Length: 199
View 1 (spheres, rainbow, N blue to C red):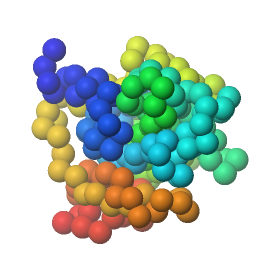
View 2 (view 1 turned 120 degrees about the vertical axis):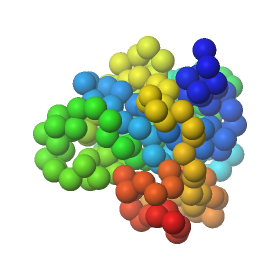
View 3 (view 1 turned 30 degrees about the vertical axis):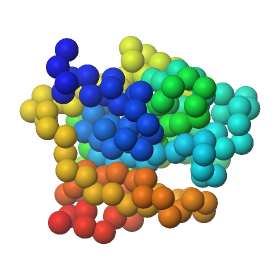
């Protein structure tokens, strides 16, 4: 297996900040739709913005599982958000998938989202789960061979995209950490765009 193809596999065991950067450019597939990851954020048990900061609870248990699990939770009682569990089993760490560039099934995404613009279909963590029909029932399922498939970059995109790094958004704690990673020049990234995104 080539280094390009297994980048998503190698990312799972990296420290969470490195994993968040490495997953940009990989793919997420579910329910006849897929997209290329263009934005991620890292979360680790050592910092208070991470759910794992409180330790192992019924809610956070998937975060401490072996890498490669989906951690799906409801945000503000409305949106399901998708995270990729990384690092070694016993360490609470995950990468939030914040935005995708639609790859296949765009018409189906439009139907699910009730939106037309391609750049509005998956440009946010709640948008992408709605577009790909990812719900809370998929929490703690495998991302390798599971219902949600974490995959390699699509053909023709073997080179990792250049990244723009910024601070995480939508949180109130540990806001200073530069743990947000966006594919440079991508208009599918969620708002607010980090400085320098479009060059």
